[in-house]
Picture (cartoon, rainbow, N blue to C red):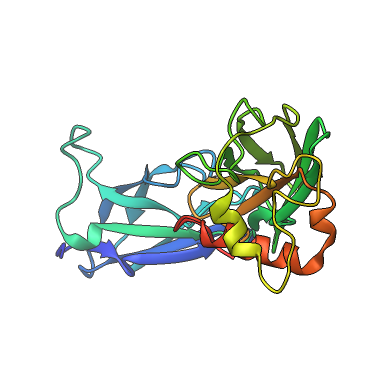
Length: 289
């Protein structure tokens, strides 16, 4: 602790909407004049973006016991995690870098509390089906529980399974892979992306595992009841890497896109249910219902 002067409180908190923070400097020696400097130092909060930098000379006369310093805080529409800056006392008669007054109470920290709500990002629907003849699929991404500031995340596509299988759509064969930054501006709550489909491709391979899963109580197999007899193909669209720090992705972070190749088979509700159960059994640990 400094024996002559120091901050009354070592940690202040202020909301953006308050517009300013007031810190108190106390003089500890009675009947003595003191001249000191007070300045702000950037930490996670940056001047002038988040607050107004100050660098002032403060004079205590013999009767003064404390001085209050007001530091303006910037209230913007952008969401940020809580930010901090430092207020420091120094000796104006010494060189910069060697002038900070000794003692733990000659420096205090100010936390700016953000009252904005950036929202969470997720897919509107986690399962979408398109015809094998479709040229593209449109997917809607939503921002819920707030819309303050600009936020973003990354969108990527990938096959349903890492190893090729009769039910996993493949890049370039069935769809064009996509990697794109999704950005929501201030007050934007919805956006759409388009993924190009290559078109139906006759796929060779053993569908026995698939048929074993769905042939129950007379259900139709994937290689029966249609001209082609191929199982539907699925690929994943994922959301991750939200920005800025503190923005979250909702539990609806993966969308399964099904390219329907056997439309007659998919009219059977029970067979569809078994099909979905089979697909979900193949999901990797990143899938969240």
